Image (cartoon, rainbow, N blue to C red; front, side, top):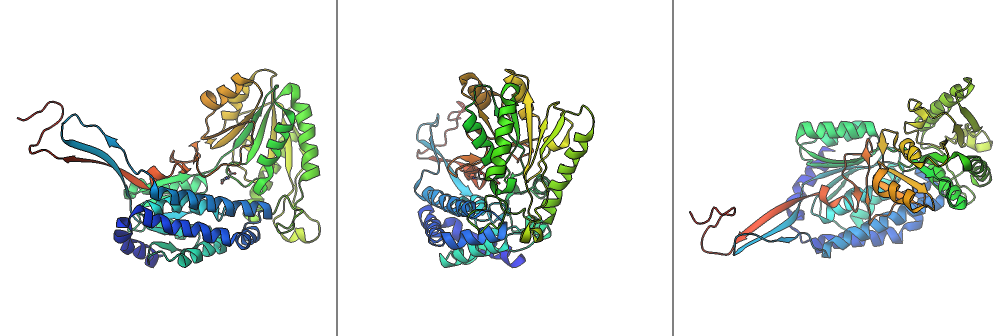
Length: 462
Ligand code: UN1
């Protein structure tokens, strides 16, 4: 790791002075290589992260989109011309890189999310030390192999493997000036604190507890489809996974019946490489145990009289055939008829197929929005409604989340939009299209073309 950070430091001066369009060409080639290797990469994603094959392919496609998008920055404006009150003074802004950048990325999008953190950073002139998750090292390795095929100058793109200990050492290394991180809230908080202490910059993306509000006017087909896609993609292990469906009580029974029936009909837990599989395993034993702990909490609560909690589909470890050897879990769905802010399973990120259906008093959609916002997280969420006012209010006024959807699911972000959350979901520095300001400094530059020094604010000639 020390060698990687020193290499990034040594390569930085030359790379940061390389023209943007030249740097962008490397990213363009990177994108082409990813496209050429799409099938092979997707297979590795499925094998290593457990995502179903179609989703694994989407992960690779999203990475290519990010690389193409980053490359486009090579031929874009990188600043503004700004008027000055002093004649013959020319003022403008310029984006300059920050320095060697640590990129620490998670296993749930092992090809796409790394590119979110380093593709634009590289085009902008930063050198990178990339640490993939210890759960998906081969995906990280494959990205580094592509980096060496596109022949970045030595030291521009570096890879280190390791766990949290490596990550911590990387954050603390004196060559590193900026950290771009996606992962857990705990790790994000540590990085933010440590960055302040060491005078570094950082952009963090942390967890979520996405909800979908379904009002009386909702198109029920959209509601059920959005719910299924939000709940089960990546086995509920997306930071945008929907785990709370807040439904008008008048349609709650219909929604519940259809959602549970569709879950049983369409969710096939199994080998991610098999085309019938719609839900692969949990990433590891710890991830599985965390979901089981939350499932057990709900089971305990359901036994208490008048708790208002009913289990609709009891999830468990899959025991069929070979599945018992892996971290396979089936969906857990419950209904919460007496909503309570202190009930941890509807507050905390569970990161798995653990779903609460929460009915609200009919017509009281503002109440539903309150429940929607009633978590410490604020990443993504959605409303399903055919009422203009409800949609307008949710999207523009009320919801406390960074990625807002209407008549869609909470998953499915695209790279050309900013991606980031409020509250515990990060430090307000979105990635995706939002990352450029966090991998560059915006410099104010002023050039005098006159023969005397004239100051603004009428300080004039004296
Ligand atoms: C994440 O959940 O960790 O919006 C990222 C989506 C993906 C990215 C999710 N494009 O579902």
